[in-house]
Length: 199
Image (cartoon, rainbow, N blue to C red; front, top):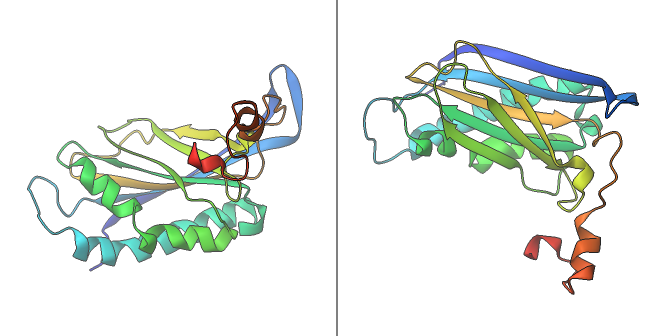
């Protein structure tokens, strides 16, 4: 079983000035999204696993190949994330199911050499619903400079019986980062700095 893909949308944002100060080099964020027919739309399906196992690798490989090409290679990507929007005739579980599987996410993790998990959103929405893909450093969950969000919309998607499945990336953090990382906060509060994810 293969996903029925209606369109693929590429998004790129290059910020030349941030906070009234030039960004040198420009701050670049990317996304690629597949708009697919929701095979479960309009009905309750108890076992989602067969479709998840079938669709996950196809979408993971396709979107990973496209986003790494956009950024100039997986080694250029410093921050990454994923997102899904399910149309109004679907469940949040449908959006969640297709992105929260190693059969989908591991393509991206391996392509960029990541140690972190993929930040995510999964929501229900109508056509033109904002797609917000949270990003974080691919290797360091406490690196606040790379807490980012890729934000765009597809005017005609998702239709009620569709899903939008997306990956996001950035080749750097915010250009004028100056709020520090989680480690100093953890240290100040007496927490274990070697395990920032525990707090």
